[in-house]
Length: 423
Figure 1 (cartoon, rainbow, N blue to C red):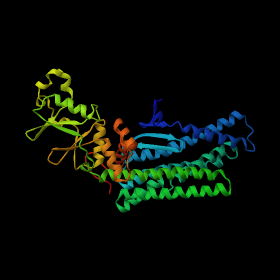
Figure 2: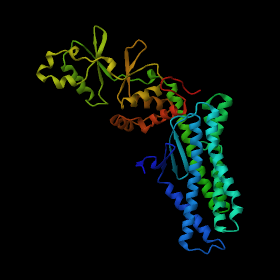
Figure 3: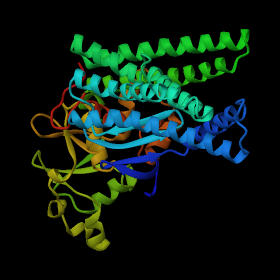
Figure 4: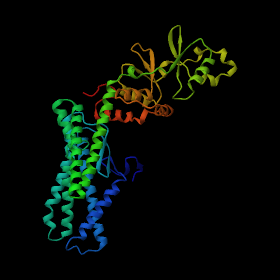
């Protein structure tokens, strides 16, 4: 058994794929065990001990567990067949999810992977349901178990075919629109809108049923509708961030957080610049060095630690200058998503922005990137939140831009070595 993970507890590996169980799965396990046990005790001829009814209820819940697992394995094995690496499978409260290193590169492969799960569920449903007559005479309890699991697999397959992301039906719609329009982005937008319409319909229908009939089914419709609506809204926000990161170029977001000192100046000038700007890893300004109008490199505070204070006047900056190539840098013409990758690769260190001639024209950090994105979508960051972001060297308002870019890489909208924005 594996260790704890943010994705759940790893319990086994199937064909090299880690199977994880999220703690929320215990809720569904308990609910289905109780529901199945209650149904068994109400059967006319179920004159069995209480512990036996609970045991059968637990077995029913485990069979549901296996059904969801097989559904996800259907997706995973088809993904592997299509050349996609499956990193893990996680089972949680509302079902399961397979994590992949990237999505399929073409719409038909995506469609085949999406439809594989429901097909597995329908096959399981048929197997369980056609087996009922074989046991109905011998054991009403066993035939009832088969009926429940068969019906649940049928519902699992049908539910996942509902036309809204992130359900399989939404992915199928995305794939079909992508195939006929040639645009993955349009496919995602259509599937997202379809999911939002479906979720709002479920909320309104659930509210009507709850008010007029007072049925618990209405409440479940509202819950699932709200979850789906939240998911579609989150998808819309992600799409907006993706578009913005592809549209904005580095030169549009750059700042100028560096000082320029002449190479002939003494070391004491480093100290004065550092004191003026604050001496911290992320908030201090870069110190670039020039000579006769040419950039020759940069300098940090290390010489001040090596040379005694009384000798600072006797040494020039040129003696301690470091090449600019040592600094993380990015071209002014790159898209902003590339800057996110570079900043995170360098653990949040500020990037030096270079023009097409290879000369520094500015700097870029997490604050600059976040502000440029938020400004483009019309959000102004309050000064106290901005100060907090600067102090923590974090994206303003907690923007999860690295995760957004990671999603773009996984979905194939961008490639690290080949810039291509969404169509």
